[in-house]
Amino acid sequence: GIQVEQSPPDLILQEGANSTLRCNFSDSVNNLQWFHQNPWGQLINLFYIPSGTKQNGRLSATTVATERYSLLYISSSQTTDSGVYFCAAPGNAGNNRKLIWGLGTSLAVNP
Amino acid sequence: NAGVTQTPKFRILKIGQSMTLQCTQDMNHNYMYWYRQDPGMGLKLIYYSVGAGITDKGEVPNGYNVSRSTTEDFPLRLELAAPSQTSVYFCASSYSQGAYGYTFGSGTRLTVV
Image 1 (cartoon, chains in turn brown, blue):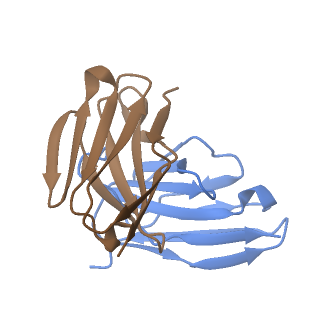
Image 2 (cartoon, rainbow over the protein chains, first blue to last red):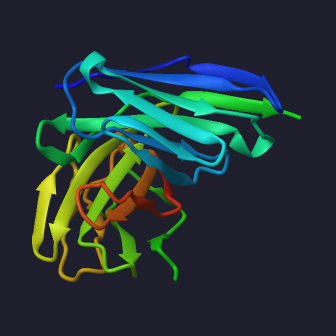
Image 3 (cartoon, each protein chain N blue to C red):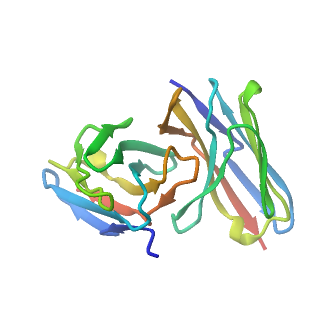
């Protein structure tokens, strides 16, 4: 099945800094999603981005499906951005219900 | 609008006991999912449902059962609890195949001793 790898595993930033998180996947996908888990465990869906670029406030994501990677950009980071960022892709082509999750990037933003 | 509600938030079980984790959503989502998250890991899909009366296995279904008698409710049943089932369990829902985003419950932290 598909493998989803994220880097870096851990990241520490000072408030105001920018960062790029990477997600590599081993096979072609038609669905790539980014999620944020805050320090209290709550999970939020950030982006559904099978290809191209999307932006939501200070966050944006780009997926290059032909090269099997996606990037999540965080600009002007804030302490509330802390937590774990996951990407996930379908385990089977055509079955978007069975998402395979990466191990996440743990982000700490210090004031 | 409550979103996805999971109960209980915490539970300690003894080996061999059974329990049901409850999940209810009020958004009329047709797709619902149960995931488990082990420490330092991503989520693994246990079971999912594409509508009332329809369920299917995910990555790690062994030791669990589900039912979907209504659109709103998707309970997860643990029979004969084992220490390997110690985890945080998340229920989620979506309109369709995730294109419109998932809404997650707040999680249930289960410890089996």
